[in-house]
Image 1 (cartoon, rainbow, N blue to C red):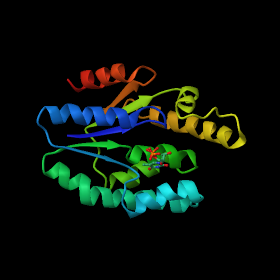
Image 2: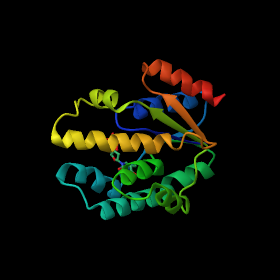
Image 3: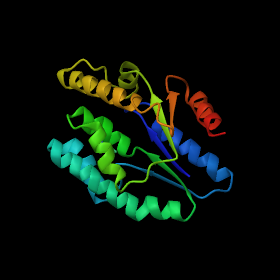
Image 4: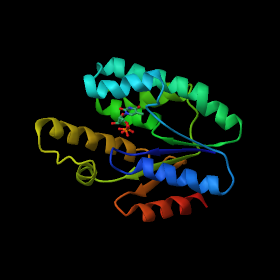
Length: 190
Ligand code: TYD
């Protein structure tokens, strides 16, 4: 079973991914909980670039793909082959949304990824309006930089929402307390 959590920053993906992992663990399943960008060399470079100055859009897109190739090869595919439950906090839908919002074609990003990255069994899209998301991450969105961030997040949210009718996707209203969100997630598994 391969489950992915997506959504803009501040929607609570990490919390829900961890809770779902605990749920499967308590049922005696072996769970591999992971995230992108990863903690490997490419993922680390991406996280650092957010602090030290961003890569060019082309370099950034290429680096997310290198990070993901390694993630699929070394962790995701072997864990699925071993019959483990794999839960990811972000995957290639984030590349569609974030690099899509930087001008690349989300559909092309999707098809380039699906050449090597397995499609998940379940995609939880945690949806929250941008104002609430920004206030959760402690930003008001009113400086010039934050204004740009707000517009980008709005485009990201729209790209995530464009996936809601995929057969493997479940849209989850994230504008609720974490316990309620977790209940919806568990309910949609049954
Ligand atoms: P995030 O999950 O927010 O990491 P952290 O919790 O450590 O801050 O991811 C970092 C950023 O990377 C986030 O703003 C989304 C972005 N991102 C992309 O732009 N493209 C991608 O393919 C992925 C996986 C993430």
